[in-house]
Amino acid sequence: MRQQRNALKRFELYLPTLQLKQQQLQSAILQARREHSAVEEALDACAEKISTYRTVFNDTAGVNVVTLSEPAEIKTTMANFAGVRVPVFKAAVFPQATYSLFGTSAWVDQALTDLREQIRRLAELAIIERKLELLHTELRKVTQRVNLFEKVTIPEARETIRRIRIALGDRMTAAVARAKIAKEKLEARQRSGEPEVEST
Image (tube, rainbow, N blue to C red):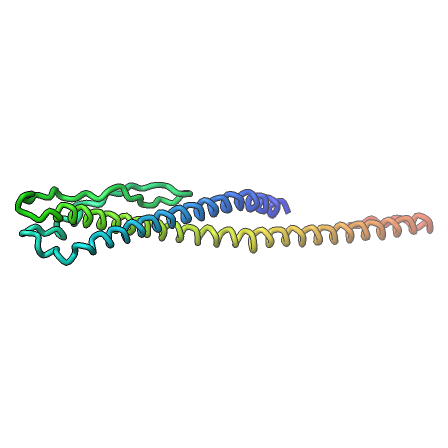
């Protein structure tokens, strides 16, 4: 009984911690989804801008804006959300673009800026999607644990305690009944003058 009560106490103390973590993860996922939507909107705006001059990409006087828009490095950092380490986008580092400002079309600078912005946003989107994946995985695990505690472990511990109480009550009742019977027999012997028989 003591063992089951102690176990139940531990379960009931641990469950609120799990539920709090579950709420924190749900909140982090909601925030990450908002970030995802904002980046997608920014990407759509970039694509719309680029579409206005994509047809003239070949007329760049030897400047390959697509190659120059490829990042040299994607910088990320790690953050902790409700005990889960997730990547956070910091920056996309691009190589220095060197070309003649006078020998290229006027729109090349803008095209390079817009393409780099699009690539930066795509990299950011990929990092957010990875973050969402990690948060969802952890939320699934925590939800399973919460369900296990709420629907299985705690009810089973309570049921075991209830059965132990019933068993102890039955034993106590049986012991009291045996004691009464023994007492009645003893009193009957004493009344009849029979000597007490000592049990060996």
